[in-house]
Image 1 (cartoon, protein in one colour):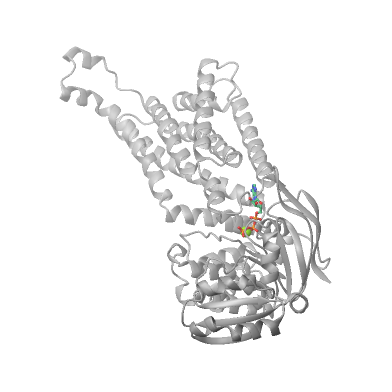
Image 2 (cartoon, each protein chain N blue to C red; image 1 turned 180 degrees about the horizontal axis):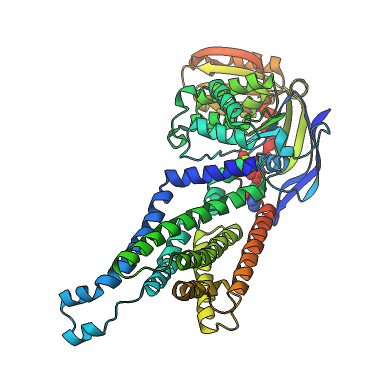
Length: 301
Length: 262
Ligand SMILES: Nc1ncnc2c1ncn2[C@@H]1O[C@H](COP(=O)(O)OP(=O)(O)OP(=O)(O)O)[C@@H](O)[C@H]1O
Ligand SMILES: [Mg+2]
């Protein structure tokens, strides 16, 4: 049974159609990613699911078992969570917990539990105004969980974080996955691949590709070669674009990822390339891609 | 109801932490003290500046107790209202524009409770400040000039408080309509002034209006009785207040919370 089924969900702002007739089915017990470039309509979609904005067309249905006010069953972390800076982390969680109907005592217990979960126990009495971005993000996740929601909706939970914060939040999401359903948006494919089971790729208000992660991977994965060199491969690799086996590449300083059509020809030619040898290769590896290629293609359209 | 009280408590705590519960009462207390004290010492003050000839001084009558209390209310209606409007013009806009509102309203929170808790809190702060300030005015009037019967003071104050609630409700209503604090302040003050001007210019046509309440209060201080048609304007004000709160809740419910993604 689907937790949420949205049919031809549409939202227009004056002349721009932010979300254009999308169908979504969010399954229970599953981590779903809504992936798309900036402006794809992710936030607008999530806001419609939470009820913060009204669709201009289409319908949203929640599982019948969860009737009444939809907000009871949802925990939400907005893209830019904002707190009362004058409250402490603990006060904020107690406040939101009580608003969700917990007694003062229960709210206090829940707050302690969540503060430990998101690793804020030490800063719990500090004013939120003095929290770092990463701490606020973790508090944001904690407040989304305060009512033991059936579905946690996280809007770009890791985008604003540094690599360490990102790691922490992704690990936290993996932990949460075991107990609740998660729906999160991101513009980073890698994050979606790491934690989600289902993926919806959006662009310009439409869902372009959807499916289970494993299913998409077998369908769209392209063979890829990963090369790391000691010298800058910048100039050399530009010539590769003309090869007939070349599909796509990504250069990050001295780390080159090339997606290819035919792995055997590509490998032979590259290994025979004298210029590559002069660049002092450190690593040469044949790998399977992430869905990067697919995502780039979709996002460009 | 429990949820309403939690929202209300949060409003109070916030105003305590940002010192609204300190400086607003202080402003009212200052003006409450100043009015009787300056009236009492006015002749001496003028004398010490030596501006007036001896005979003129005898002509400045020391005002009566009820008159001083009325003048105090006059001060409250100007500076007091200005302070209250400045303090609360962001009552909705602040949370909406900063995005804190969105995180609360996505929880199973009643929109009506959210709004009325804010309204109740700002009214409580306004009325408390008024009572404090006015008590000082009454005390100093009693010490320096003459005492006004307690029953008159209390009855008059209650009538005046109703007019105050009308202004606080205006702030609330305009806050749900406009995102700009300047617009809220301008419209609230503007409408308050227009209503009170019209009421003093055309007391007959405006006999129902909240703008008549202060003059009823003045007359209660003096005679113990309100002016003509006092009950009409009290009833109309109560009605207007409840209708405005209703409209505010209706608008607030139907406005989209997440108007911007950032
Ligand atoms: N309140 C609004 N008024 C007008 N246009 C809007 C509004 N909100 C969103 N849009 C438009 O709708 C489109 C989708 O916006 P949305 O915020 O949903 O994208 P997103 O996928 O969340 O992007 P990002 O990754 O930048 O957060 C954008 O083109 C945006 O300009
Ligand atoms: Mg967004």
